[in-house]
Image 1: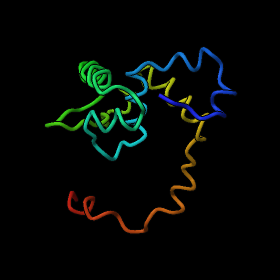
Image 2: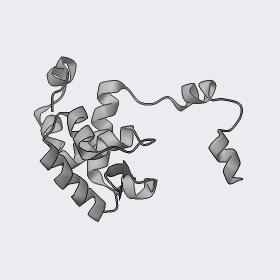
Image 3: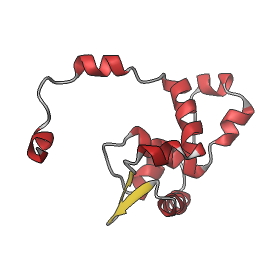
Image 4: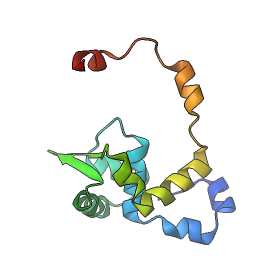
Length: 123
């Protein structure tokens, strides 16, 4: 997986070595938690071999950190389970350092006033 020059220059060797393939896969899926992907799409997006990504996905599924349906994979919606996984914490910290933390206030300022149709259907 490639990294940008700023991360290369500013991150310690420990920070760069700590992200295992499962950490990278889980970090990618968590960053795109509103979507499901095929293993080859994940591999392409994070610059890893599809076989390594498939193995990581199987291991993450065994830990109930990802969900699998047909050929698609998505991160679990169980936030407690995710937060209990140390790799997720390391990946989140690195991604926050690289891209900045999410600003919930900014998200709320741009959120629509009306709920999404899918939310209305559930009520």
